[in-house]
Image (tube, rainbow, N blue to C red):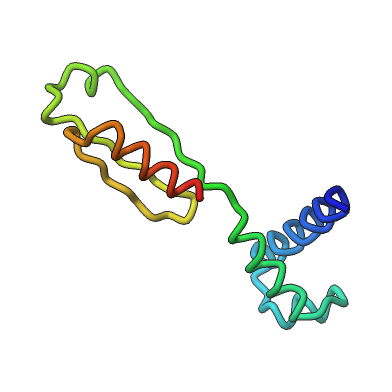
Length: 103
Protein backbone atom coordinates (compact mmCIF):
# COMPACT_ATOMS: atom_id res chain seq x y z
CA UNK A 1 0.00 0.00 0.00
CA UNK A 2 2.98 2.30 0.57
CA UNK A 3 3.81 2.26 -3.15
CA UNK A 4 0.25 3.21 -4.03
CA UNK A 5 0.41 6.09 -1.55
CA UNK A 6 3.64 7.30 -3.17
CA UNK A 7 2.20 7.22 -6.67
CA UNK A 8 -0.92 9.08 -5.54
CA UNK A 9 1.29 11.61 -3.80
CA UNK A 10 3.35 12.01 -6.97
CA UNK A 11 0.17 12.47 -9.01
CA UNK A 12 -1.17 15.14 -6.68
CA UNK A 13 2.21 16.86 -6.38
CA UNK A 14 2.21 17.19 -10.19
CA UNK A 15 -1.38 18.53 -10.16
CA UNK A 16 -0.57 21.10 -7.47
CA UNK A 17 2.53 22.27 -9.34
CA UNK A 18 0.52 22.49 -12.58
CA UNK A 19 -2.15 24.60 -10.87
CA UNK A 20 0.48 26.96 -9.45
CA UNK A 21 2.08 27.37 -12.89
CA UNK A 22 -1.28 27.80 -14.63
CA UNK A 23 -2.22 31.02 -12.87
CA UNK A 24 -5.79 29.70 -12.60
CA UNK A 25 -7.77 29.63 -9.41
CA UNK A 26 -7.99 26.27 -7.68
CA UNK A 27 -11.71 26.15 -8.49
CA UNK A 28 -11.17 26.73 -12.21
CA UNK A 29 -8.18 24.39 -12.41
CA UNK A 30 -10.12 21.58 -10.70
CA UNK A 31 -13.14 22.14 -12.91
CA UNK A 32 -10.98 22.00 -16.05
CA UNK A 33 -9.27 18.79 -14.90
CA UNK A 34 -12.30 17.05 -13.43
CA UNK A 35 -10.87 17.14 -9.91
CA UNK A 36 -12.68 17.93 -6.69
CA UNK A 37 -11.51 20.97 -4.81
CA UNK A 38 -11.79 19.00 -1.56
CA UNK A 39 -9.29 16.41 -2.80
CA UNK A 40 -7.00 19.14 -4.18
CA UNK A 41 -6.88 21.02 -0.88
CA UNK A 42 -6.49 17.78 1.12
CA UNK A 43 -3.47 16.70 -0.91
CA UNK A 44 -1.93 20.18 -1.01
CA UNK A 45 -2.05 20.39 2.77
CA UNK A 46 -0.81 16.83 3.21
CA UNK A 47 2.13 17.24 0.81
CA UNK A 48 3.17 20.59 2.26
CA UNK A 49 3.33 19.01 5.69
CA UNK A 50 5.49 16.14 4.36
CA UNK A 51 7.99 18.16 2.36
CA UNK A 52 11.48 17.87 3.80
CA UNK A 53 13.18 21.05 4.79
CA UNK A 54 16.01 21.69 2.38
CA UNK A 55 18.95 23.93 3.05
CA UNK A 56 22.53 24.28 2.07
CA UNK A 57 25.53 25.64 3.89
CA UNK A 58 27.66 27.77 1.61
CA UNK A 59 31.15 28.87 2.48
CA UNK A 60 33.35 31.19 0.47
CA UNK A 61 37.04 32.00 0.77
CA UNK A 62 36.21 35.37 2.32
CA UNK A 63 34.17 33.73 5.06
CA UNK A 64 36.97 31.29 5.94
CA UNK A 65 39.33 34.19 6.63
CA UNK A 66 37.03 36.11 8.98
CA UNK A 67 37.44 35.74 12.71
CA UNK A 68 35.19 33.29 14.51
CA UNK A 69 33.29 36.11 16.22
CA UNK A 70 32.25 37.60 12.87
CA UNK A 71 31.13 34.39 11.23
CA UNK A 72 27.52 33.25 11.45
CA UNK A 73 25.29 31.44 9.05
CA UNK A 74 21.87 31.86 7.63
CA UNK A 75 19.67 28.98 6.54
CA UNK A 76 17.07 29.77 3.91
CA UNK A 77 14.31 27.20 4.13
CA UNK A 78 12.28 25.97 1.16
CA UNK A 79 9.39 28.07 2.52
CA UNK A 80 11.51 31.20 2.17
CA UNK A 81 11.89 31.62 5.91
CA UNK A 82 15.36 32.47 7.17
CA UNK A 83 17.12 31.15 10.24
CA UNK A 84 20.14 33.17 11.36
CA UNK A 85 22.62 31.38 13.58
CA UNK A 86 25.31 33.30 15.42
CA UNK A 87 28.93 32.24 15.34
CA UNK A 88 29.02 31.44 19.06
CA UNK A 89 26.21 28.90 19.03
CA UNK A 90 27.04 25.63 20.75
CA UNK A 91 27.13 22.53 18.54
CA UNK A 92 24.60 20.72 20.73
CA UNK A 93 22.13 23.61 20.44
CA UNK A 94 22.54 23.77 16.68
CA UNK A 95 22.04 20.00 16.44
CA UNK A 96 18.76 20.26 18.42
CA UNK A 97 17.51 23.04 16.16
CA UNK A 98 18.30 21.07 13.00
CA UNK A 99 16.63 17.96 14.40
CA UNK A 100 13.52 20.00 15.21
CA UNK A 101 13.47 21.39 11.67
CA UNK A 102 13.68 17.90 10.22
CA UNK A 103 10.69 17.09 12.44
